[in-house]
Amino acid sequence: MLLANLSLTNVTANQQYQGVLERVLFSTLTTLPCCVFLFINGIMLFTLRSKALFCETSRYILLYNLLFADTVQMALSQLLYIIATSRITLTYPVCGFLTMLANLTTVVSPLTLVVMSLERYVAVCYPLRHATIITITNTGVSIIAIWAIGSLNILTRVLLLLEFPFEALDSLQMKDFCSEISMFVGSMSDDYDKAFTCVLFISASVAITCSYIGVIVAARSASTDKASAHKACNTLLLHLVQLGLSLSSTIYNPLLTALARVLTRIVFVRIQNVFYVCIFIFPRCLSSLIYGIRDQSIRPVLIYHLCCRLKYSVIQPRLNFHPRL
Image (cartoon, rainbow, N blue to C red):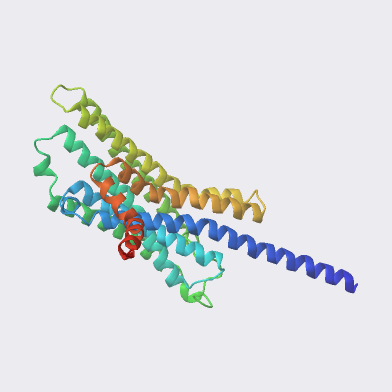
């Protein structure tokens, strides 16, 4: 009997050790690429504020807004992932603040893509009026409107949360890990989230698609710059891809809910980690990679800022080296 108990204890300890080891391994494999992408996005944000051209051009101002929202979303997602992996439970107010802020940036990204698509449409279809329509002032107003729409969405979610009887709970300490699903404390919150997400992405898809069709039609006219129209078409297609990747994050929770019913917990956690990197982390770094490589104005400045430390480390020893005469 004693040997059986010792054997059972050893098996349990071994399973616990494997569980901890697997958590550490998956946390490392997800945190490292996230840190790399955060670094690249940070350099990209710094690049877009390093020259007057980027600060005074509407296209780059909108790109900065998009990158800022994606970077905040990525950082918050990684923070919540680390908290969940460490098995730390938060209070409802703290979790609500983090999830609402993450949801705000999630709304900002597709709306910014819509405004960027409209800017390209005006640049190709109305080149003579582009300077008067797309001004710094109008760009600032559009960015304020984007964040205002996202803030109204958050305010509505908060009002729906207030209907939940939190005073009936023994404690505000959450029993589960902090996530957006755990903050759906009522059926109305879930229904509102689904309705708002559908309206948001359908409207964004229609706007970007119409802009793409308008650019194609304009490209066939003799008065349109063919090279500029072709480049605008490619940019709008990339916006559609980015919107699709952003939309994929909305099916993350329903997909995990369906998989949790048919898979074991260990397999489910492994798949969840893979989906987290592919659906949440990768799309958030796509903007900086696309524009950093494609844009002829950004590319040399971005490469300079990414490689300046390496150049400095190579040049500095040569400066400090004094050969004997």
